[in-house]
Amino acid sequence: MSRYPQWPAMALAVAAWAALLVQAVAAGPAHHATPPTMASWVLMCVAMMVPVVLPAVRHVAVNSLRRRRFRAMTTFLMGYVVVWSLTGLLLIPLLALPPRLPLLVGLVVAAVLWQFTPARRACMRACHRTIPLPPTGWRAAWGALRFGLWHGAGCVGVCGPLMAIMAVPGTHHPLWMIGVTAAVLLTRYPPRGVWRPGGLVLDTRFRAGISE
Image 1 (tube, rainbow, N blue to C red):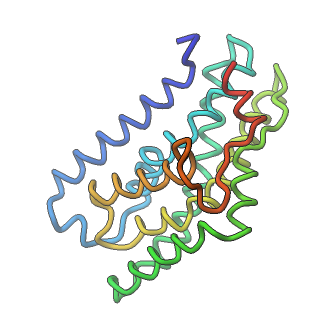
Image 2: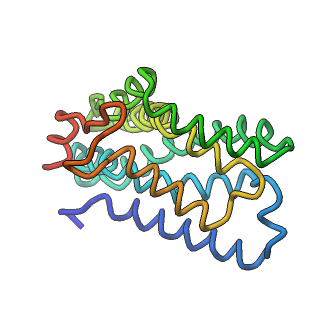
């Protein structure tokens, strides 16, 4: 646990995946033809986006006092998920309108083109930027929460077009979730030696922070 303090966050993501799979099996095919509920959206964000943010969770853990570690990680994730929840409040009603197929094709094309924009590169840099984390008191809680909000906003800027696909009726299916999660992970952390669209490079300062 001390070597891998981020594992509770990974366990949370696994639990969200399990809840989504149970929900999909219980609801049947009709479930996937409707827009996602806010509860489903939050579960999808936890399942799909928390694995992406594990390096930041580790950064929060190793830069917090041991007795505050779990509390700091929880506070960070609360801020992070709040940003994605607010994004869902905007996207779900906006993308619930027919026709779905042209909308879905347009979102996929937009998500691909977004990878090459300067705005996305700026959001990527924001995702890998750290902020001071005070050690004790309300400043420690606020620092972890502010870092979660900051990181969530950066992640929405990087992965928002991909996650928008999940707000289209008919796409909140496990196969779509697996595909979009793989795309998010590959664009955020591409393998070494592979051409990286848009200059996707993990910030060296953040890399140093998570290697402690």
